[in-house]
Length: 286
Image 1 (tube, helix red, strand yellow):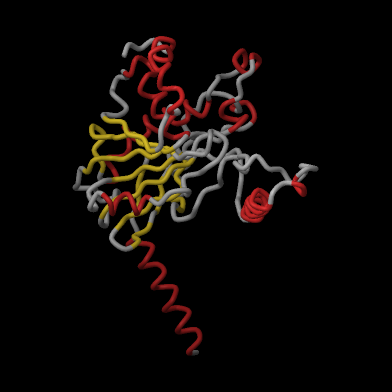
Image 2 (tube, rainbow, N blue to C red; image 1 turned 30 degrees about the vertical axis):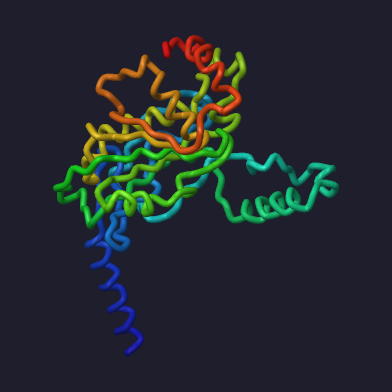
């Protein structure tokens, strides 16, 4: 009897905790997030249809409607297929003869890789808001937005590689952070004529742009101001920021972002002397 009572009590507590959790209606899907400390987390929300089969190497499209159920946005999504980033391979016949440091890095990467869930169905993003924001009852704040693009050489990385909580803390709890995933490697940046003829080039960049459009449409539900979006990236993410600055002459309607920032240099020091030539090649003056 006592065991039954404890089970019922736990079940009631679970119902109460779920009912108190933040819920967002995106028009095509509903998600339940979580409160972690003094922040609101929506982790792993789909922003584009799975890029599979006929949609592989195609521009991202709006997901199908799944409004009949409320989906969980409290778990880390699958990461996009990617390389290990070290240049190493389990089948490399020369791995045993390489120096200890490189072997150690490769072994660590392969060990970590076993715990990763990789899938082509990986076009997800996460939104982190300061305070306890419940989009279902209406967000009554309008914070600036940081749109974070992860690095990884266009062949690795994920939305969980960097801590959005750290960004919120650095800005004194006064920003909303959007962290995205985009197609990588041959799925996102395959440069081949048949891909151009039958699909699109740089699908990974188009994923980022689609996520920016998603942000313009939905970030206000999380307490963010769509007119105050800063795109920010590190390494390949910084390179992506540059691409978005020069794409479409830097102009979209409505504007997808207001400011841009990057971490780590975009152009090596040895190439700075030819920056004017590079600028002219991409159609910009210096």
